[in-house]
Image 1 (cartoon, rainbow, N blue to C red):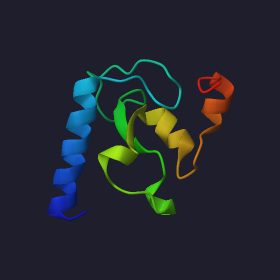
Image 2 (cartoon, one colour):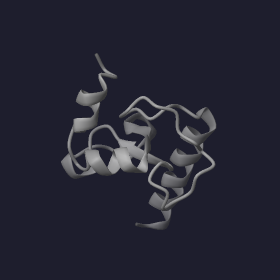
Image 3 (tube, helix red, strand yellow):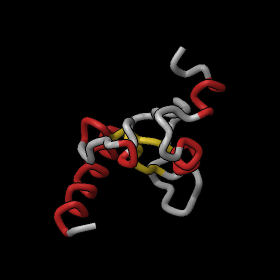
Image 4 (tube, rainbow, N blue to C red):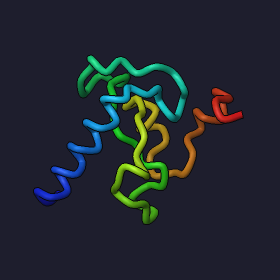
Length: 88
């Protein structure tokens, strides 16, 4: 990661963290006090995965639990979304 992209990633994280949204994957609240490597800590998930050509910008970034993001991986949708019924 270049210095510029690290700075952009840090700005994205800070912007999302200030709003304190729920996890966009499971819909449950995120404890923003938790830190890595806690599986329920806050991470940024890309709606369209970077591996599939998604942009590394705020418009493509959402808050997620580390474990939900890990489950989703580089897929467009995580199996947990379907189980939780959050999007229905």
